[in-house]
Structures are given as structure tokens and as C-alpha cells.
Amino acid sequence: MPKPDADAAFSDTTYRKVAWRLIPFLFVCYILAYLDRVNVGFAKLGMKVEPWFSDAVFATGSGIFFIGYFLFEVPGNIMLHRVGARLWIARIMIGWGVVSALMATCTSPVSFYTMRFILGIAEAGFFPGIILYLTYWFPREHRARMVALFMTAIALAGVFGSPLSGWLLETAHDWFGLKAWQWLFIIEGLPSVIVGCTVPFLLTDRPSQAKWLTDDEKHLLQSRLDADEQTKASEGHQNHSAMDAFTSPQVWLCSLIYFGIVVGIYGASFWLPQIVENTFSKDKWIIGLYSAIPWGCAAIGMVLVSRHSDRTGERHWHVSLSAFVAAAAFVISGLPGLPPVWVMVALAIAITGVMSAAACFWALPTAILSGTAAAAGIALINSLGNLAGYVSPEMVAWLKKHYNMSMALKGVAAMLALSAMAVLLGRTGSVSRKT
Image (cartoon, rainbow, N blue to C red; front, side, top):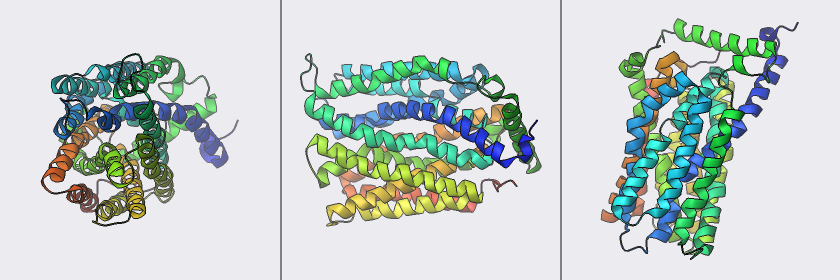
């Protein structure tokens, strides 16, 4: 019988097998989730002809999603921890897919706000649930890369979703009496329902339940996870209950750090189509193609940065430097008179930096939380951090209205810089590499 813990080749093969089994499917799920969350940025280009729609309505509606998301995030993740990922993720995906498609029924600011709020409730618990789910399979030395591979879905949602959204807005006029922006919501919402129905059959809750693993592979995975828990205890991170998460200063610090990172993510997601339209072209299809470029760069860059973080075992500088680079690039992208090609280069660097920071960030809290505290803590960090999804569009809209887009991008950069400094000054726990 092989000795899995001493056999590096066996270990590498096992983790590669698990990654190929789980990550591609989770990746597809998150592409659909993120596309349904931010396609409103493209829909705005078609909805702005509606008499009831405006930049202010867009900003409020974009942000109100995160109020519903915030309210139901922690209980949703605790439920996932208790009932298992398969059933809970299926429930979330089917719910948000239906609500996203129903965005096509909006006829007033009130209905727009209401549907965005309900969409936030429907999606609450998905992202932190997946982060928690990955801790059931991967110990800390694999986590940043696995999270990055999963989170490249955000980038590729931009790569594939931007051209699709642009094409729909350009061609789907008056299909069966509906407007192009209505078809955008319907066509991009229904796949989530279909994929959600397959989740119970394609995901496995825990390694011990995986029929596709051998007994030796199950033993390897569980022994590494057990060793990870012992390391947390030896470092003084004995957080197990939900109350431990709520009373941990490190959890609140992580929430503050993630807040600034999320300002950058949604500053790019919601406003990139508008920036491209103002800089390059009014053609919706061309806007979609140009908008895909920064996200394509981010998909590659974030995986390389997170892989280096896992290989070296260093987290803080990877998060901080990525956020600082993103902040500087956002400022440069808004400089008056900057040639369009350099605007695109700056935006590509900015989005790559902010996504790299986000991917490496999740190795910090998952290294200090266990059990129900991990479910509650990850959800708390994500929900508080994602309140930036409300603040970011409102902040950008206000600065754009009273100053200009350049000042709005500087506001986004300032929040990223504050997060970068908080990472280094706070030092959220030891996450050095295990030998």
C-alpha cells in the first residue's frame, strides 16, 4: 500500500484529480453568477433610452443588490455548512437565474430597485459558500491558486459576457416584441437555472463521500486537512463557533481590507462599458470586444500571482502590492488626454491587479477560521466587503457628476490603496507555508 503523506507524486496526482473534478464546474457556476450580477452595466447602455431610467437610477439599482446580499449572506453560509454544498448551491443558482431573467419585466425605478434587491437575496451565500467548500478539500498551501482558478470566472465572465452582451444589445431589437436589454437579462439568466439543476448530481460535499476517490486518496486529503487544523491551533487560531467569528478583530480587519478591494472590482465591472464607450466606440459590439481585453489579461495575471503566492507561502505582500498596482493604474487610466491605447493598457493592469489581490486575499481568513466560525466568518467578510458593491457605484456616480470620470477613478484608487496599507499594517495572522 502506498504511503500518501510521504509520496509527493501521489499527493500531486490526487490534488490534480480533485481540482479537475471540482474547479471547472464551480468555475462555470461562478461565470453565470457574476454575469447575472453585473450584466446591468451593459443593460444600462440600452436602458438609458427608457424615460424612467438615469445614471442615478442605475447607480442605486446596481448598489441595492448588495443590501439584500448583505442581509442574507451569513445565515446562508451557515445553512450551507449544515445541509451541504450540493443542495444549497443548487437552490441559490436556480433562484438567482429566475430573478435575473425577471429583470426584463422592470418598468420603473421602483421595479428596478426591487428586482435588484431580490437578486441580491437570491445570490446571497454563493461566493462565500464556494470559498468555504474549497476548505473542505484543499489545505492552505493550495488555497490561493484554487481560489484564483475559481475567481478567474469573474475575468472570463467579462471576456465572454462582454461581447455577448454587446451583440445582444446590437441585434436583439424587437425579438417577439421585447427590447434588446430585456433579451439580455432573459438569455443570460436562464442558463443559471439549467446548470443549477445539475449541481446535486455533479458536486460531492466532502472527500469522504467521493465515490470517485480511492481510499488512499481520501486518507491523504483528510490527513492534510487535519494537519491544517492542528497548525491553526498551534498558531492560536482556535476559532470554531459563529460567535468566535463575530468577535475576532482579524475577521473585522479582513472585512475592511476586502471592502476596498471590492470597490475596485465593481468600479471596473459596472463602469468599464461606459469608459470604453466614452473612449473608443459607440458601437455596442465593439464596446463588448474592447471590454473583454482587460478581463482576459486579469484571467492570466491573477492565476500567475496566486500560484507564486502558494509556492512561496507569502500572502500579505501579494495582496498589498497587487492592490497598490491596481490603484496606480486606475489613476493613470483617468489622466486627461491619455491616448486610448494607453487607457486600455492602464485598465488591463488595474483589473489584473485588483483581481490578483482578491484571489490571494482569501488565503488570509481561511487560515485562521475553522468549523462554523469559518462558515460565519467567510460570509461576514464577504457580506461586509460586498457592501462596497453598493458604495462603489454610488461613489463613482457622485464623483462623475460633480467632478469627472478621472476623479471617480481616483476615488476607486484611494480605497484600494487604503486596503493595501491595512494588509501590511494589520498583518492578519500567520499564513506561512507548511513544510
